[in-house]
Length: 268
Ligand code: NAI
Ligand code: BGC
Image 1 (spheres, rainbow, N blue to C red):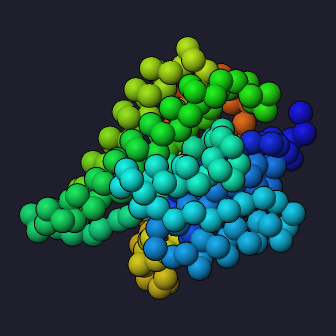
Image 2: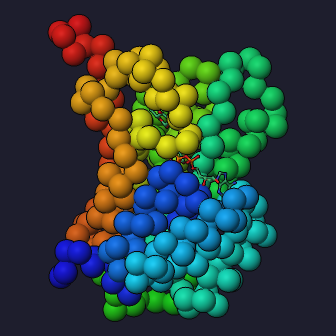
C-alpha cells in the first residue's frame, strides 16, 4: 500500500469545502489520490477555486453547489456527482455553522438553521451515500463498501454556554454516527467522526484574531497552540482509508488537549 496514495481511485464528497476545515480535507483527500467533489453552499467562486487548485496539482475535482439541509438540492448534487464520477466511496459531512446567542434569545429561525445544517445535513447526505453503497456493491478500491465521516466538535462533550444549539447538534451527531455505524457494520460500511478543538478557520475568527482573544483561548488549550486545517485533513484521510478498516463508531479528538479539563493543569 502506497502510504501517500491511500485513497487512490476513490471518489470523495466533502460538504462545505469552500473554506476552512472542508478545504483542508478536500486538499488532503486529493493528495491521497481521491477524486473530490467540492461542495459549496453560496460561495461558488470559492468552491470552483478549490476544485481548480486540485486540478492544477494534477488531481481531479469538481465543485457542486447544494444546501446540505435541503433534500432536493442534495439529491441533485448526488446526481451530478454520479454523472461525473459514477459513484461515491467517501462521504465527508463537514458543513456547519455557528451562531453565538444567549439561550433565552434564540429564535426559531436560528434554532432550525443550526439543526438543519448540522443534523439534517448529516442525515440527508449520509442516507444518500448509504443508498448508493448498498446499490452498487463492493469496489476493488477499498476493503469497505463505503465510508462516512461526520464532523463533530469537542462540544459534543464540553457544554457550551451561548451556543446551546451548536452543542446539542454536535452531541446529536455522535449518537447519529454510532447508530449508523452499528446498523451497517456487518455490511462493511464504516461510520466515524472527528471532534476538533480550536482550529484556525473563518468560523472562530473572533477567538484568535486579536492577541487578547488568543491569550484567552490558550487558557483552554493545554498544548498552547491553535490547530490548522491540514491536521484535521490527515485524520480524515486515515479514517477514509483501509488503514482504519477495523475502526467504526468512534470519534477522533483533535484538540490540543482541550477535553482534558485544562483548569486542573496545575493540580486543580
Ligand atoms: P467555515 O465557516 O470555514 O466552513 C464551514 C463551511 O460550511 C463553509 O464553507 C460554509 O459555506 C459551509 N456551509 C454552511 N452551511 C451550509 C449548508 N447549509 N450547506 C452546505 N454548506 C454549508 O468553518 P469551519 O471551521 O471550517 O467548520 C467546518 C466544520 O467543522 C463545521 O461543522 C464546524 O462545526 C466544525 N468544527 C470547526 C472547528 C473549528 O475550530 N474551526 C472545531 C470543531 C468543529
Ligand atoms: C467551534 C469553534 C471553537 C472550537 C473550540 C468548535 O466546535 O466551532 O468556534 O473554537 O469548537 O471551542
